[in-house]
Length: 581
Image (tube, rainbow, N blue to C red; front, side):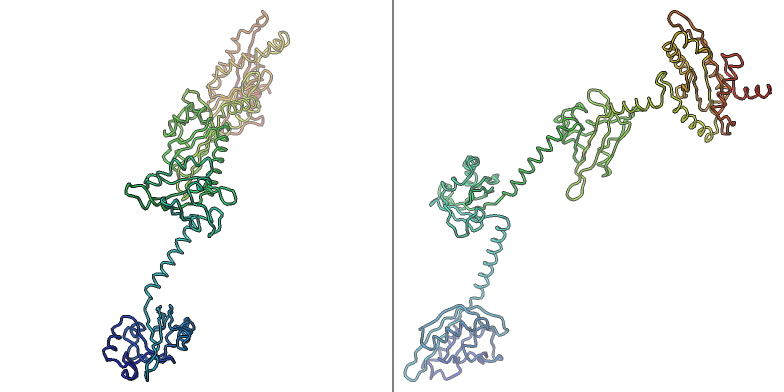
């Protein structure tokens, strides 16, 4: 493949053409490539347009044969056509081929060739016209690429295209439209309006007919038609159809509408599943006894279940949009002071908040309910807090039962005073407190005098009544935080924390006098009651080998021995005991 050295003829034109040199100049001006070759394919003439087309100049090697023009990938097709022409098998030939540019890349051309039969001594010539169609081919390739891209996009989006002509009541359906409905891409589908209506689900047809006019008028607010259409196999596909008129008559009526149908069956299935799940959740939330409140990121209520309505005393509709603090207000059960809202704390910290003890909910009706609650943040897809959920339970009865059980476990059933087991724990605590603070406490033992005659003569009921009355009397003589216990049949004990011996003796004397002053009568008979008491001081120093309880008991015994109806300190009792020895 060598280019001609120039666009001049390579043999004598007078011998070849018997024409004026002007003809040669005219051929050089023709805007398409022109070649002349003999029947063997040897090029005898090439014009300027041909040279420009292939990027040839005077420095390039000449192309000597028309069989050297084609790109290697198209060489066979062009050679076959030119060969048949040269052999006289066809009068002319025409085709699209790729030639090889001087730098090696292909150029698309339309090659048209014919035979000029020479007269007398003139040789026969092959006249070859080459029209550059590279731009056209590039445009075609771009169009094909674009069409493939849109076809792929439509198929990926589960969409099909339709084009309806009102004038003929005919419609064009794309391959994707057919495949969506179970038809083959080239299968005929009746596109008449009546046939289309027959394929629409009966429940959806009225809505389609009622709204199709909005599509025909290109209503900007119209979002499309959603309906079920019967597939070839009898099943139904959910379709979202969007279209717009593109041609109108002189009165503005649509003549042609183009649109797309999208298969939204999977979306409808998800919507149905979500609706069913939502209904299940609604039933569950309505059935559970726990109160549930959800709020948005600003802490405004957007949902309350029936239990929450009952516990707060506020209707869900009235609560919606209001700050949660207006609906759910807590205070400390013991102190009555307001508590922080767990929902707002959860929103602020992004952490779950649990409130177990001492929380009390004040309802709109003024009722106070002890509750246990949990608040947790709700996170969006990107991790941001979009709200919070509060779950709370009314534990008023269970807390009351717990307190009752705890009271029963630590208190005497007859008198309501602290029992012996709880008293011993309290005593250990008082001993530790005295050692830590270096402030003494007093322990008083009290034993009733003459209790046995009451119990024996009047009966156990009278004895129980007397014990309850004595317990009440001792309790009234002590401070609210003092520990008063029944530690035996007719034995009582008192712990006075942060109390020096002198003050303890004064309290003990007060108790003894109050018991002695009791007027106890049963079945018309009066009984004289008195008590003896012993006191020991709890200090940081360890007690004697008797222990603090032993010291108080010994002091009480000494008080009885000294004549009953009195109190004696262990210090005094120990001194008397040593003197007797």
